Image 1 (cartoon, one colour):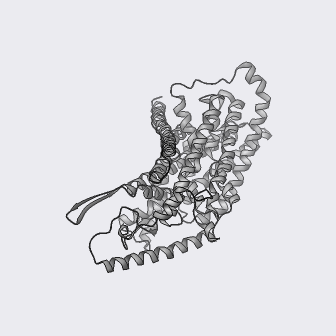
Image 2 (spheres, rainbow, N blue to C red):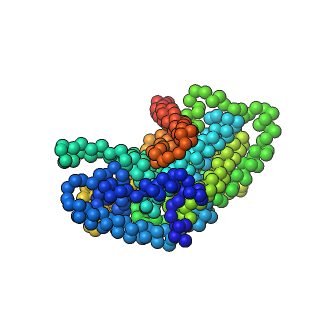
Image 3 (cartoon, helix red, strand yellow):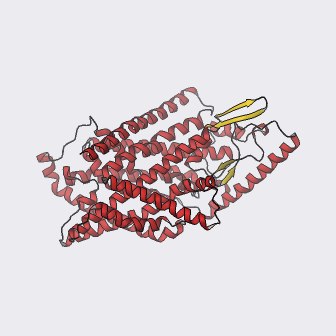
Amino acid sequence: MEGENQPLLSSGSTSSSDEYWNNNATPSTNMRVGKKTVNFGNQQRMSFPGELVESQGSDVRRRIEEEETLVNLSMKHVVQRNKRAEHATTDLQTFVHLVKANLGSGLLALPYAMSTVGYIVGPVLLTILGVMSIHSITLLIHSCQVLCKRYDVNSLDYGEVAEASFWQFTIRKRIGSHLITEFTVGKVAKLVVNIFLVLTQLGFCCVYFVFMSENLEQVFDASGLSLDKRIWIGILLPLVILFSWIKNLDTLVPFALVANLCIFFGLGAILYYIFYLFVEKTAKVFDSGEVVAVSVGGTVLPVFFGNALYSYEGIGMMLPLENKMRKPKHFVRVLYAAMGLVTLLYVSVGVLGYLAFGEDIEDSITLNLPKDKRAHSVVFHIVKLYFCFAIFVTYALVFYVPMDFIEPPLFKALKIDKRKWSKQIFQLSFRTVLVVITAGLAVAIPKLDLFIALIGAFASSALAIIFPPILQIMVFYNIPEPRWQKILWISKSLFICGVGILGFFTGTYTSIQNIIDYFEG
């Protein structure tokens, strides 16, 4: 039904906020800008409140422009709605996508993260951070749904939600009736969010290079071919560059399907192995005190904070998945189910992996799998190769996201015509340079734990915990409701944001200090 294809609030009944925005959602005639619309990505959308109509031009011309704007918006809204209906995903498909988006190198590094705080404190902190992350994602989704309803648009991405949330804060300087300068906070908010998204995705790419090189080094060492991990990064670089040139994600679909099978098979083999070791060593572990809870003081917590938040790698996929759902109002409950399963898997792999290998745990649990030439070890060498292939394909998928943000405004600023061959050469060269940069950073810092802690503390904390509560406050603050309710949810949002900011600064500082110590050591 048509109503099912619209982004709605998760509540089925009409709340006071619904009534408020039903009466106030459409800007009045003196709040539109005629043909001047806000550019959301590649789509033209209705201007936000705060863009006052200039006093120039006749009233008749202004009304005609307003009618043209509304007609164009209505037509685009119908196109968006039909597009959603044609390519909509079911609840089950969205559930699978959510689980897959959060199963990657971060999961394999959680046993090492557990070793920094111990098997008692670790699961508790990981669960708390997981609940906070899931709740923050819910705040982001609700904010997006309210903004879509408020401005009568079909979908918004993360940056557009930030832009819409802050759009009312526009600073103008006039001399008489002439507008001299204009500064819009919404555009700055969108830029900040997009910068963090780009840094997060490119940071993931650096981690993927290190992950693949470490596992390939170990696999081929067992066969007698000993190459340094930096050499393996150089061997992988041309192949990664070729895959980065792919401009259509549909081309990667067959590779992605195989990669998914590799990940699930590999995870199954790892869970079986660590559970077997856990059962075998349980008595020894608790009798001998081989594994004990490490102190949570000093620099341990910031490192764990970054590692734990990095594992929630799918934050950039949340809004795109919600936008593609056949029934977007079901997204929150699907999110709870999927992320609940993911968090349970995180805690299980983290704790069992730590207890199975103790203080000998490596940066990635794949590096703790059997390394010799015995028959059962060959199976685990294959598992490592499976993960290398899956991460290789994931690199191309993750690399596509920052390119989608960077290339359009870059081509526009440089006035590069998309139809000319020069644009193709520049695009391929630009992508090659970025891939080389990520490979260069991986060569410079070939330590998986250092990269994961830094990216998790700096970028993932901002996107997963800091930004969503701020956007919620901006979107819902003016909605009428009892004073005590407003104070309660604002206090909760500020608390979550404060935890994120604390982890952001302490985790980033500690990670950078550890990197400096690595170079000095």
